[in-house]
Image (cartoon, rainbow, N blue to C red; front, side):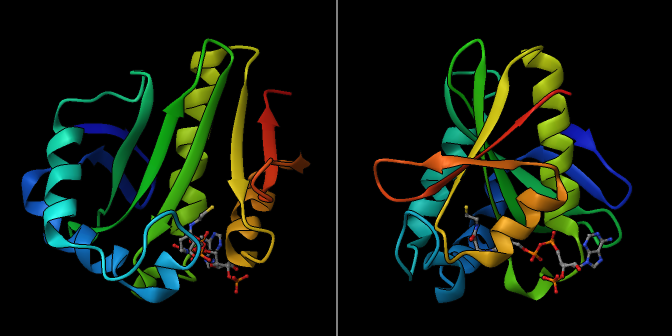
Length: 164
Ligand SMILES: CC(C)(COP(=O)(O)OP(=O)(O)OC[C@H]1O[C@@H](n2cnc3c(N)ncnc32)[C@H](O)[C@@H]1OP(=O)(O)O)[C@@H](O)C(=O)NCCC(=O)NCCS
């Protein structure tokens, strides 16, 4: 089911058939190095993740992984994770398959999720927590108007965006 659309992307629920693609991009060492999992990421873990996401909506508490589909080819190229933390705060995370880096797809997808999240939260805040050496991720946040707002207890840089 499509949740949001942008010029080049369809942001949709993950589907059972996506598991091998999620497994492949999560297993890339250049992806896993900045994320909470290690490579290789098992296919059974990808299957369990996709199954869990079939029953979730981004407004539910906890993390929801939203698939990023390239409209031109129908290919799943990554996901945006959205965590509704409380009535005033949500968080985002994101992953693109490396073959699709450098095209602005992450900025386009995360931007759509953040805009929608800010609409839902009203005067709330969207947060992203990033390792300080993750320049590509900080680039996404900077392009979207996030501002640095300190460091987390685990040493990640915390970035925030509010509706202006
Ligand atoms: C973080 C991540 C999604 C960023 O991917 P990305 O491809 O660099 O980001 P975008 O899709 O927004 O593309 C931006 C790049 O495309 C270029 N670009 C091309 N067309 C563009 C367009 N229409 N709009 C914006 N940027 C465009 C930009 O100049 C930029 O290139 P640069 O890095 O050489 O300056 C990717 O590196 C990734 O998946 N990393 C592993 C997982 C990870 O670290 N996740 C974040 C954890 S906090």
